[in-house]
Figure 1 (tube, helix red, strand yellow):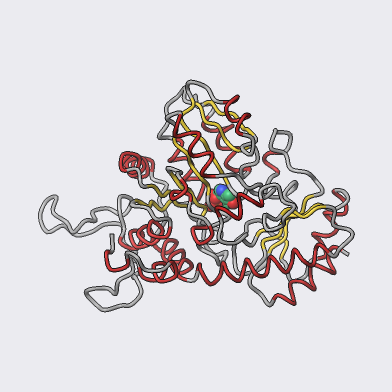
Figure 2 (cartoon, protein in one colour; figure 1 turned 90 degrees about the vertical axis):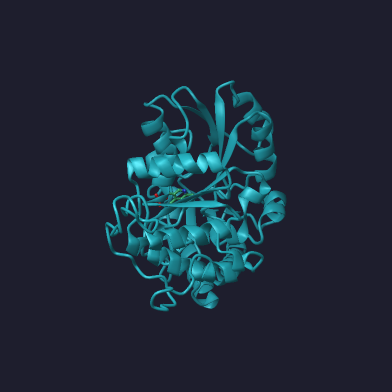
Length: 381
Ligand SMILES: *Cc1c(COP(=O)(O)O)cnc(C)c1O
C-alpha cells in the first residue's frame, strides 16, 4: 500500500503507514473526515470516495495501518469486534459447519449460537488444544476453524500453525481472533491463518474510549466478499471512532511492552499469595500452553486470570481492588478487574462455555507497577 514503509519496524509502521501528511494542507495527523458524501466532478467521477458507508479517508488510514501491522494486504474496520465476526461468518452458507474453540469470548459464542445457527450455520465448540478432538468434530461440511488465542477469560493458548495446517489440509479457512495478543505480540497470518479478527475496542484502541473491530486478510477473494458484505450490511465505524483507534494504534508497541512487564510483576505477586489457588497466565512454565506461547508470541500479554477458593472469595477480592477499576472490557491503559462468571461471560452461563465462579480476570494497565502490585496484594489477601 504505502511503499516507503515496507521493511520498516513495527512501531514505525504503526505511526506512519496510511498516515502520510495531508497533501493539501500538510497536516501531520490524518484529519477526521466528518462527511457522509463526496463531491463528484462529473456523473460517476470522483476521487475514490463517493459515500461514507462505502469508504472514508480516515477509515482508509486505519485500515492501511492495521493491515501493515498484521502483514496483510487487506484490512477492514468495523463498528465493533462482533460486527467484524459477523461479516466473516456471513461469507459462509447455510449448512456449512464451523469448528470453534470451546472457550471463545462469550459474545462470539452467543453470535454463533443465537444468530448464525438459527439461520442455518452449524458449529461445534471443541478443545482446540487437542487435535484428535478437532479431527473427531470435523465433518464434510466444515469450512472454517475459529481460533482465539490466548482465550478470554481462561487464557488458553492454541497452536496457530498446527491448527491452520490441519484446516488447510482439509480445505477450510482458519480465522484467529487476535484481540488479546495484538499484532505486536503475535501475527497469525504469518503462521498460516487466513483471517485475523480484532476487537479494536481493546488493546488496539487502548484507551477505553471507543468501540470498534477489524477483519484482516491476504486472501483477495475473501477480501472482496468482506468489502461487499460490509457495504451491503452497513456495520461501519464513524470517522471519529476510527480516528481515535488510529491514535491508539500509534503507541501500541510501547503500551504492549508496558502491559507485559506489569503483568509479569502482578503474576509474581499473586504467586506469593496463599489465597490464590491457580494463576492462568501463558508466561508461567506450568501453563499447559507455555511452549506454544513461547513459539508464537513475542511476550505473554497483559491479561492475567486467577482462581480463588470459591465464588464468594472471588467476589470479595473483586470488591477490594482500589487502583484496578471493577469494569468489563480490557486492553486500556488503566487496570481493570472483573468477575467473568457474573460480568463479561454471563451470556454463556449454563452453556458448555460457562466459566468457573471462582475466577477473577485482570487487565493489567500501564500505571506504576508498584501501585499495581500493592493493590493486588491487599485485594487477594
Ligand atoms: C471484546 C471481544 C470481542 C468483541 O468485540 P466488541 O468490540 O466488544 O464487539 C471479540 N473477541 C474478543 C476476544 C474480545 O475480547
